[in-house]
Image (cartoon, rainbow, N blue to C red):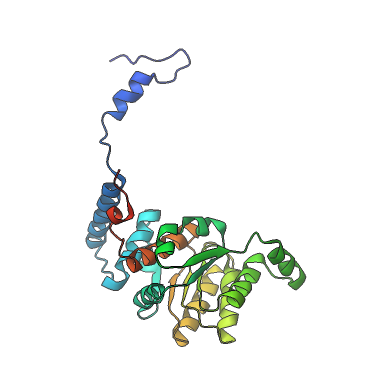
Length: 245
């Protein structure tokens, strides 16, 4: 069969339409539901059993990354998910992130329903100056400022191990955050900082969720936040979040 092309070799509009007609257009809510079904099915095929309390978080991270390694490298302190949901439902909590990317990915409608907030200080000139004067990093200074302003916050690190170093130091100093999400990605100080932070949280009865190993990222951090938020506001079902079309 001959293919009608423009002189420059590009596909014609007709060809694009014919190709698109092979696919079914599906509502976003149905795409998410089917994706979650596929994830659960593949977990079963791989023989991986996730505790029911943690399953929503694990599935949402896999949904975000298409990476089933998270089924095994995501670690949770005892009752971390349930305790975090209960804390969120009390209202007024703040998420402190170490990137604006993670901040932008957190569900704002869910935050509003819980009278919660989310902030990132990384681009704040005061933080830049503070990091320079103290010889640290903006992530380190951001977590320190976050603890000063919101000591019971949910601390979220998807990028900088120095953020975890700061949180670990502050826990030793007596900080008791509502939750620490420790999922920075990388090769330098990443594995060690996650391990140290997770062990400290377990020892001090602080809820923590960590991606052991090198993997992680701001998208992973935001997906964990959203998995907790959706459960706290009973909106795990995407139809409840307004995905009608």
